[in-house]
Amino acid sequence: MIVQIAHLYGTACLAIVFFQIALIAGVPLGAYTQGGKHEGALPLSGRIVAAVSIPVVLFQALAILSAAGFPGLDWPVWTGWVAFAVQAVTTVLNWITPSKPERAVWGPVTLVMTVMALAVLTA
Image 1: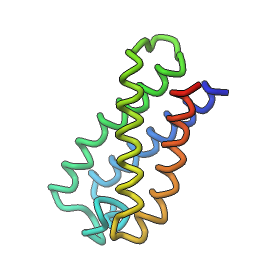
Image 2: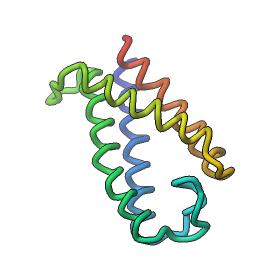
Image 3: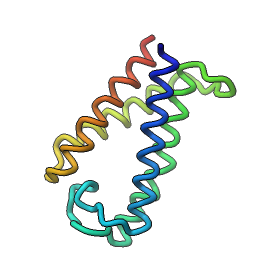
């Protein structure tokens, strides 16, 4: 069961990476990210933030997959806890954002991801 939860977590991370790629490409989803300061496409600075977040999200996915014992991933346990901490902070930020669309979409998504990461780490 833990392996399946880790797989779901990794899949959710991959979806977030694709969302970030869409933001970088100029898809007008600014209301759903970075506090909703930009209704349409993000300015260059916002796109840079989206680009920087991609390796962070990929790290999180790999750390949780490693914690679940996926073959070929033998990362130290602390990396999973770092991924969990980043995920928990992301969840809080998504719930307190002034952007209603961001809260409505990413609040629940990141909360479920936080619970999944914790489940894997405490199994």
